[in-house]
Length: 341
Length: 262
Image 1 (cartoon, chains in turn purple, green):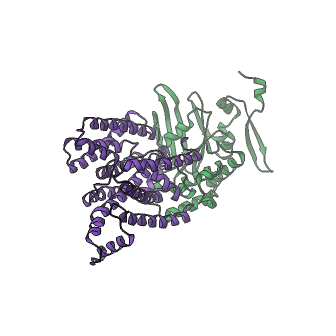
Image 2 (cartoon, one colour; image 1 turned 120 degrees about the vertical axis):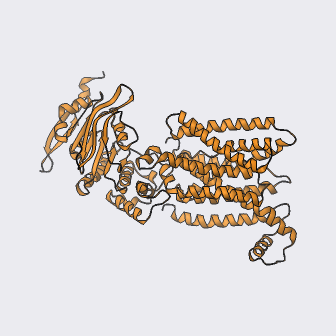
Image 3 (cartoon, one colour; image 1 turned 90 degrees about the horizontal axis):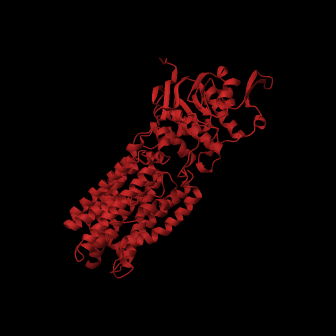
């Protein structure tokens, strides 16, 4: 493998960095702790021992920070995989769940539910349903384009995304300024502030199976990344594969939107970082994107909740971090001659 | 009816992008196992479209087509968005043999190594595909088609973008496949000399949608080729290195000096 030795170094260092980041994230916050205390707490928990840790630190780590750190890592990993899979099946390094209309669709679903009832279960369900509605709309509009080509589908995604973004704006316009608007805005900018084990369970139940499905298709995603005609010539059923991956991506995105609101940029930039490390082969790229995504989102969320007295909205920071990374990716793109395919 | 040895057959084949405007029609093509067939014709005569019909990427508007489902298609070029390694490109030729949720196993990689060996590209297995020259890329794409264990190799102008040395390399590999491996090959080409050198049967596709099919020696005549390309063509027979006479085909040199710009 051309990336062989590099990728072994990558796996070890990335896993190490992720674990360290998660530990540091557990120790940082309004109630700071030493990493050694965090480790002792976790050790006590794991061995059911009755350590010397005091009750407050135990509650902070167990009930507040652990679900939050785990949730941000799951969502980060999921969005990383979703982005990598989308870029593969659309043979386009510039697509992401936000661009294809899935995330705006899910956001609209969530916003409407907040507007109508405010019940969290309904919000989550509605985000899910509208994520699916968005991707179905993309499929229908894509068919109007006739060719069924990747470009038509990407354009259909842009159209759908713009439409749902407009609907989301409409809900903020209608929303009650006192009660509903803050909730909707919070949701649209993304946050892990409400993380608990219930949300963690929901994220696991949606993200894990979908990531598993996409990972199982890793070799076929490689083939599809050559382009439709090529893949068909090699004997691949192109449309069913692309739609299977799209459904997986929708489940991941809807799950993430449901527990954290809109988290922009992660799905776009993480695959680029991962590709720099392990190359374009999805057998390596998908797990690498999961690792990098988890690391990046845990890091950004920790900064969000601890940099200032009040929480910075998640998507603000992901954009600030993501934009320069994306510029780097574009430079690389120019060198590889993307955009001529 | 096609007999047991027939691998590819098109009868009364017609294709039109717009109703009534035939790109080609009443086209006949017949290729038996182990034969090499070549498709000749000027730009826009429908060679690539015919290839797409054989691959299943386009559908004939008229006539019948017999073609093995397991065929290895070799495109002119491969525009890669992501820079895969040569091995990873070649193993994609095995996708038919790999289960839906599976990845390549040891046997698949053996096929990959053997195919790369056959085209003389084994040493390039770990290289990035985009770093290869045009000729090397073409050989890798042929290896990918071979790795699939296909009954038919279908090549779309495999030498179109290559210099003479690289054309020679590709033709050498095709010659080896025909002579040693009994591979059935159907390819389109711009160079009638390639057909004279390698083909058992040829299909001539004219701009007006008509076509002619037959054994190489009966179709590669001066008059037929001149009409096909709209350029006077010469046919010589010469013994090379004391061997049997060899057919040499070429456009009449410098004829355009006499004609002038029309």
